[in-house]
Each structure stands twice: as structure tokens, then as C-alpha cells.
Image (cartoon, rainbow, N blue to C red; front, side):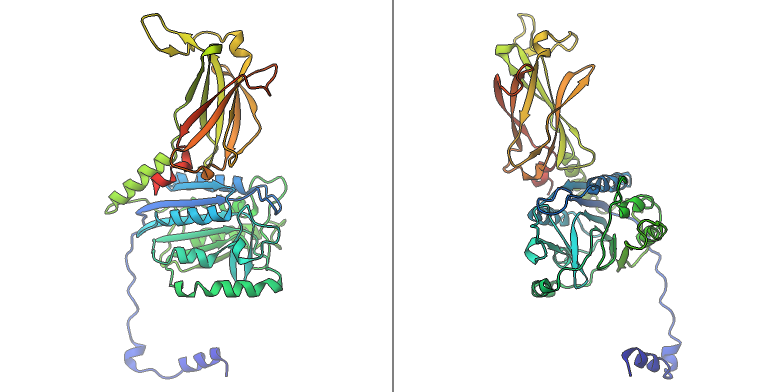
Length: 427
């Protein structure tokens, strides 16, 4: 007799009256609220040895926008190596405590072995189907083993195709080391963008990947996260382009129907909440503009920064040239006179900014502004790679428009901390 049949047979056995008449467990009146709301969002597009992806950064931006509207403190990071992913997950774990709502979202390349997802950093080799080149869910759960937040939502927007058969034995041996960390994780929800053995897709011409295209329509709804993910599953099922090739999956140990939109009420957690809030705001402050004087040419360069969406490890950098003006003789400081039209000298020079080699900087582009005149701007990525306590340093090169490859004069500039470089201050 099979085990299921045996259980059914035992259910038919006459039970003592005391057992059969035992009252139902009372329903507890639980107020669903968050003591804090935090989110770590990772999007990997630019893989060194694997196919480049198109939509992950847009997917990350879309989710961060929605979560911030619901008072989540988001840290959104693009194009991380495997070691960087592990580092920031460990730091993120320090923000999660009792009563907290936590959201972890990863979008990029991944695969599956024995029912478990593995995530890949942008440095993954072409043959990445080895434990040392991937981040496993066993490892992630081991990081979360000693915490019990009110909601721990893991959204994994990756392919779950199975690895080649001859690679499986290495993963089985790898997973053995985590058995001692296995604990019951209450209030945890897995939202997989697709089912085991199949891919997660981007549709040509779409801004978002398939999963985020539909998740963004429900993520702010005042419904439980289970209902939210079920609606995503139904929406994708109605999409004739992908309904037969991508089916999301949900796993849950959620004990109450918690919603991402539940109110944030931090009574009794004020000290920790305020501490997280102050440091999160600090990490999302841009540095003051830097001014660099080139006295011999009577010019001054201004370098300033703008947010690049909600990302915490990349920014826009802008640089402009103005005339260096002198105040009257009774003053002993210089100033930029914004009311006067720039001279021909200023108009014919540009400020180029060069950054440490470990950072990724886009090619320079020109931006015309009625107030600032002609500025150059770049997208600077990989701020998490900045080493040391001093933050970002750069070189500002003064060049003439007639020969923008030749540096006339340069200055070293210490910008200080910028966004994610404050991570040590945050945590």
C-alpha cells in the first residue's frame, strides 16, 4: 500500500470523542504593518563572457520606482561581479530584523540544479555551470538563517534551464556544506519569473522583460504578495507571445496575507528605523559640485553630478567651463560671474574628466543649456569598485576645442564619497 493510501485509511479509523470534538484554533487578530521597509535590487546586463541582456536595468528601475512610492529604502545596483553580489547581500542582511518587510530582486543570467536557482555575476565565464562561478539559494538562505522578518520576498527574474548532466555531481557535493544551516524560514516568499527547466524572456521592442512587464501592474496593489504574484501568473498566461514558454512559479511560507503596500508604522523600533533612514539618505546624497581653477588661462571648471535613475552605483557626471572673474580689490577671493556672457576664451575650452581605471565611464557627450552653456557629460558606473576610505578621485583636463585630444593643463580632484561609496558609513 502506498503512503498516501495508508494515510487515507488511517483517517477513516474511529477517533476518541475528545479528538473529534476538539475546537478549531481561534483566528488571531493580527495588524499587518511593517516596522521598516528595505529592498536590495540587482540587475546584471553587461556580462563579460555570456550574452548581453537588454532589459534588466529598466526592470530594476521600474521596481525601485514602485517600491520607493511605498516607503521602501531601496539600494539598486547594476552589473555586479559574483563577489560584489555576495558582499552587498551580506550588508543588506544587516538591515533586516523583526517586523521588517524585505524585498530582494535579482534580474540577470541564472540556471537551475536539483530544484535550486543559481545566479550569475557579470564576471561569469562562458562555461559558468560550476558552483564556484554562481550564487546559490542555499548560500542566500544561510545568510538569512538567523533572522525572522515579517516579510522576506525573493524575486528571481532569471532563466531556470537545467545544467548539463555531467555538471550535476559538483553541485550535489557543494550543497552538502549548507545542510547544517537549514532552518525553517517563516514569512518567506519566492517569486520565480519562470518555472524549472525553462527560460525567462525579453521581447524585442519591449522596455521591460516579461516578468516585470506584468509585475509592475500589481506591485503597489493592496493585496497579499501571493495574490500579487498569482495575478502576474494569470497575466502572462494571457500573453499569446510567451504563455507557452514562460510560466512563473510561487513558493511561500507566509503566515499572514501581507502586502507590499501594508503601512509603515515603526513604533517601538524608532531608534533602529531612524538609524537606517539617516544612513540611507546619506548614501543617496550627491556630493557638492567641485570647482577647479585654471588661473593661467583665467578659466574655472565645474564638475557636478546627477542621479542616473534610482541606481546607487552609477551617476551622470557633468563638467563645464566658465570665466574666472576677480572681485574688487578689497576682496581676496575669486568668483564665477553667472550674469555675464561667457568669453570666447571660455567658449573654446572644454573640461574632460578622467576616472580610475576600475570604473566604467561612457564616452563624452555634449549638452547645451541656456544657463550652463556647453557641458560635457558621462555615465559613470561601477562606483562599488572604489577602494579606500577617501571616496572618488578624478583628474580634470583642460582642452581646446581645436584639439580635444591634447591636455593643456590638468588638476587632481578629490570628490569624496558618492552614493554607494558611503556603504561603510551606512552599515
